[in-house]
Image (cartoon, rainbow, N blue to C red):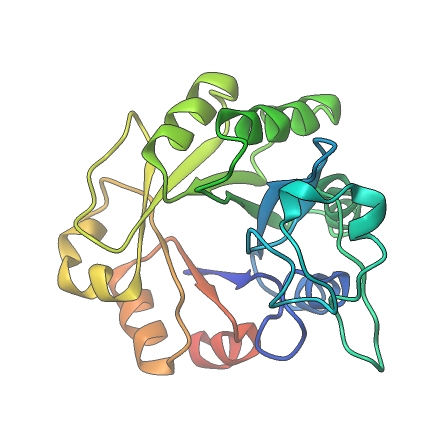
Length: 229
């Protein structure tokens, strides 16, 4: 059975990367969740996709130029259901309430912090005793980030995300886009584990399931559940 991963939480119905989106996704009978992380000005790993807060909050500015206390003052939810930016630590606390659920953590680049971002994620995971946790998977579009994770956390699975032909970095798994996955069905020959993103059309969900995709990331996990059942 292809595992369903809620992309940025239950992104199709709730504001992305919010506690609400992750909670609602984790309640579903799916494999787990995906999140994006970057660093605040004071070096804390925060859950956010963009390098700025402009698109997803009621504030403005670069994440790297804002302290966590300042980021926590912003609303990344709705007026009726305000939500604050989460620390990766807080999201992992939430994950612990759902035994068996997986998390894919994407480091965002071009991060102004460079290698510090992967080092900070590794520090969070080690501090929690999760440096070899099979529920954790590390993903990035940046091959150098994948190499750093393989050095820092060799027991954790990595997926290199690509929207072009996949070239393996070390022993990483494949993270093709839907377009690349369908253009290169040889990725599903059983040699590699695969995480395909972002899969929102039922016909693509069905195709990937039939071809043996390991995991699919979707904004619509409820649709994926209905389709794959």
